Amino acid sequence: MQTTSFSASANLIPMHNLPKNLKELREERGLTQSELARRLGYKSAVTIAQWETATRTPELGNLIALAKYFSVSLDFLIGATE
Image (cartoon, rainbow, N blue to C red):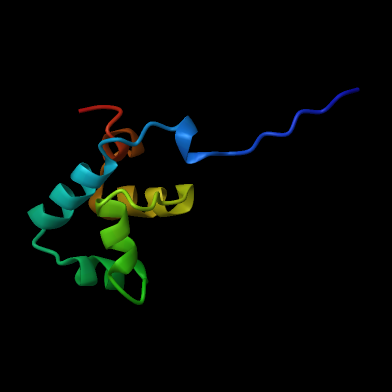
C-alpha cells in the first residue's frame, strides 16, 4: 500500500488580501503594530509588520488567533469572502 504525504504550503491557501485586511482591522481598532503584537503575545511588532507587508505568512494557529481577536472569520481575514 502506497502512502501519500501531504506538506502544507502557504501557496495552497490564497491569502492575497491578508496584509490589507489585517492592517485595516488593526487600524480600525486604533492599534499600533506594537500594541497588537503585545496583545497576541509577541515580543515585538516585527512579526505583525511582516504579515502586513506580505514578507511572511502567518501559520494556521496565528491566523486563528488573529481571527478570534478581531472576531472575524478566517475566510474574511484572508480575503476569501468580503
